[in-house]
Length: 94
Image (cartoon, rainbow, N blue to C red; front, side, top):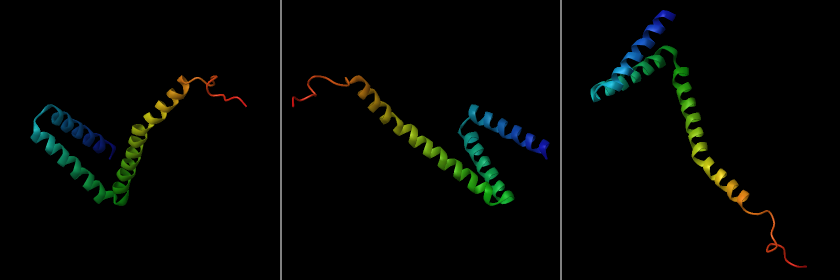
């Protein structure tokens, strides 16, 4: 079974390389092959083959949102660091 898995990985790699180097038809057929491979994994393994990619995609989207919104935190910190901690204008006489 391990040799069959390695053979399938080599075939998918070859198809991916050809899709990257060739025209539009090969790219579309590569995507169709990947979709059919995923559907056959769902048919063979059942629910885990469906839910694991969904959970990984949700984690990836969450990571993307964190990366996109994290720049707001760093801009705020640099603005505070540039401002002086205390000055004579801020203190009012009592």
